[in-house]
Image (cartoon, rainbow, N blue to C red; front, side, top):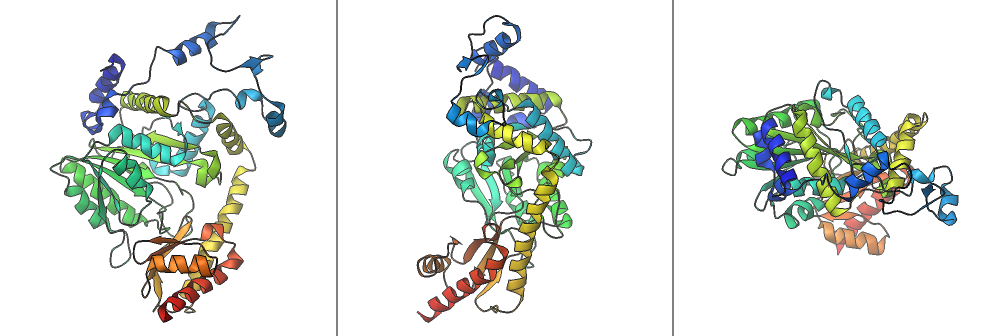
Length: 433
């Protein structure tokens, strides 16, 4: 093992041996080189005042070399904020501003110790970093039966984790914290579990209420008290899009400092929060009472980044930072929030109006995010999906035998009634066939 990796491991052990035990083999072996091209370039940047012949970019006139056909379109930005490599951890000011935003929007983090957010290539990259650092073949990866399919690829196929699902909802259509707890306690012999919490949930658009949130935290605490090391990942892709009475902050805050056997990790980003999906700017943040442990985890995270993508895209980070600092940012974001909330409320009003009846479908609870799901009673979801796309020109997502996901996020409010009329017509067509 490289001595640098060993030093990081010793820092983690000294801070919390349970966290060291959570690391995968790769997680224990990975490190960020302190001696090498990056470190030598950084040293040259600080001290080589005459010539700096270290960095693998081209310069001209003291700025990064660039083409006019590109810079002419981006003339509001300095070439140094577009063309040179961003640091592997991301632009320092962007990390600081995002951390301030996180603390402001999550009051339960007050008094808690968290790492400085590290920039990722959006949320999938953040999740893959967690998988690389913590998932070993056979580890239990716990998440509900209604989930984003990429979890299976990221933790199951890539890292050979064992998927453990539990029903998302109880019979009363509240979050199934008892199911989560049972899934956790079943890992006592393994002594380790990785839990994925995704609120607002994709595909259902559901965020638990405060009481349900407390039950989730209590379930994780009980598992830790039973001797299970729990890596808890808050996948906060749709954070902030809370339209009704639900949690209004990430559970990351309540999980921070919960128990020595619990390592909370927050994965979030500008992609959906700030409506910049193609920019691919995300963040990964850790919580622990030990600052040296957090610093070591950050270095291991940078090691994964260095070994995979080297660093994130610089222009995207510049654009996001510029937006976050703009005095118009909050007002513009609120305007888009209200549009999204109006669409969600319109969908709920349509489904509650009695227009379609409950014989063909019911809907899973939704109060946030981009999506909602119908539970079909009389036809198969895949049959309906194919019928709708080929006969009505309407695209939806079939999930399992009964569930049909509809993204109201990309449908104008005045078009939603027509959309559901078409879905209803499609169901009736198939019933007659």
